[in-house]
Length: 413
Image 1: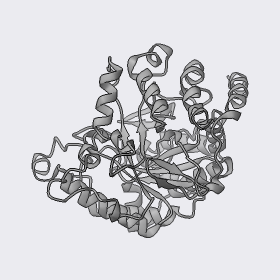
Image 2 (image 1 turned 60 degrees about the vertical axis):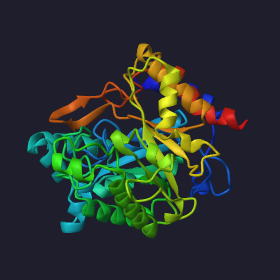
Image 3 (image 1 turned 45 degrees about the vertical axis):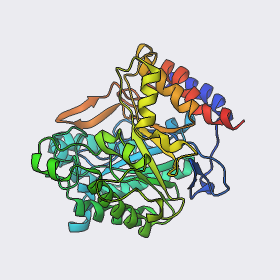
Image 4 (image 1 turned 180 degrees about the horizontal axis):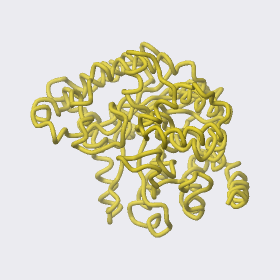
């Protein structure tokens, strides 16, 4: 299997010599109209992957199967230029309130003493640089350091408050003030993380919150607060805190309905009494929008594209008074060629290439330490196979993702 990966990796590394190269020396990034640009004024298009670190153990997934260096090398080998690295507020709460804890202890809590100890032993075997007493945030530091070495940008994303699998409308993490979503602690966590991670040379941008959604199991909160006014009040406050702590990073705003709707923002409507979204409320050239797309049963490209634009992608229109970059920070599908040829996958591929849209695919991780109570759970949508040793579908990688990764260089040629 390793030989197969090495041969495939060598082939696509040659293919990617012509892809849109990026050097971390060109950070920090800014925005100009609909584009993200580097410090020399060149357009930068995100082509990346999601690497979860927000779940029960509260460190990035997969380290029992592969070293951090090997994982980042796989990401680099096909030309990806950014990792959307996720974290949970719970980890930061614990750090602020009592100090960080050793990863070994975190695994014992997440998996039980026996299974947690076994996984921790495997992580140390694969990652001998992680000492026996290493804490969770230091593992994030190690990922950031390796991304720096290999020229991969980091987009840091707060995925959830309570560390676990995300998301559904009844998981208590849906909306500001939900049972496990303390908005004050969320803002506090971002103040801490924005200050802490500004020492990461690879940090390019941050996403304030993943997939805000209706709190269907919290009717009183839903009726009183699920609206654009509360969205803007909370997001504006958090963004301003982040920018105060680290004015160099781009702050991404996610939308409603599982981050599929920013229509009121991009159409410049009154936000339920909060007025219009104002770029002037934030540092110039330091905000962007993010949206997700999971219309996996889509049949008609034209209808799907029209809906995308109506729900927020119209911010890319240079005539829009609120013109801003929009990045597709999540989309995904089962990794086989039949699914890669479906209208959903092909329409999105066509859309991001035609509209010159940045993106990060969900998900990299071939398996999870634990997901919704199931240990070592396989992820059929993952780019990597279960033991993180190779691409789950080399054919999908070669025929679907490589052309998408190379598209920005064709557009700039």
